[in-house]
Length: 397
Image 1 (cartoon, rainbow, N blue to C red):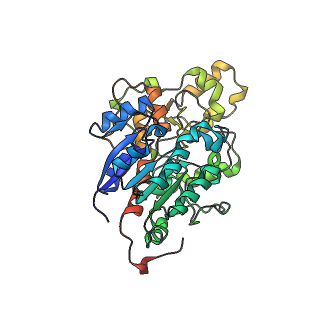
Image 2: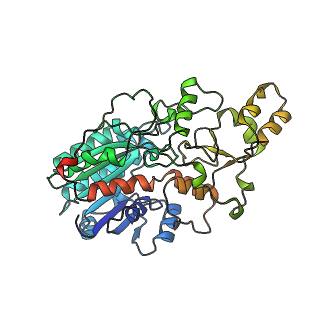
Image 3: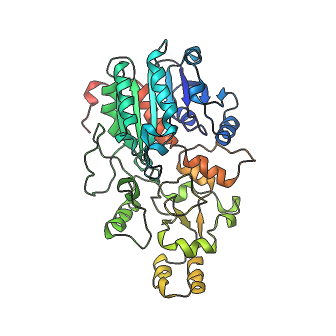
């Protein structure tokens, strides 16, 4: 492995990539972090006060500015909205893709190409025109690269957050072989015996775990409006010993007042059938989005905190009850949102990560929903920057 890596952190957000480097153990210096989100920048500066933080658009960085930084690696999580179903999939025609296209324009003109590039984005990017332009630019610049879709359940974290990653290296050699040979070790397939997904456009084609129905098929996970296959999948996930239990990521009850996180009566009455309810001993939860805490459907799981009450008993015959009776039944479960700290835990952020005092709960959920899983990225960094193993360990995914 080379010495200390000089990293340019584009779309730096709350510092997920920076924390991933710390988690990876790879010596690195972030020479500049760049983002225009003022709330995210406050949180980044709070946790990394010594890192130069540029509150400016990427298009506002000149070629000369880039060259002066003399970086070895670029990390980036470009805006995901142009590639999501909710974001209307505007792709390269979406104005939010402008900064990413600017990076692709600048890259070939740099005095010195960065040796490494690590990019993260949502499922959907892998079929986009933006990806096609990215791969064309990397190929023209002489990079070798590897793409993979990964969810945190593959590293033992009980949260589904399927994401696209690209790892690239500029110099020729066996780095691409190294990544291919080790990627299945780092992200093992799930314990479930479900039918395989359609062949991926990515390589290698080893299956990644944690693909929930809303990520694969674009459907919301519905509690008590589920198909038999959906119920079976959840049972399989909850019985996978390679994934830790939710309770390992929760805050101690005595340390936090949980009353503000309880779902209010209006929310319970309106959204009960579509809640994704998990218990402390579960080994699964659905992806937390930036709308968590403001919206209910499809934004993340909620936690049942009263274990003396059976969920089946509460939901059985619920539609036949009056509104008041229905509410009394639902209140028995004591359902609550995960706290921002708990969401951060499930996203792999270390205990040293914290929020400035002035950041509101809703703001915390929003920036976390826009961030990435630190543990997943740390393993990818290790794959990209650590020396390849001997040839006799090579395996086929």
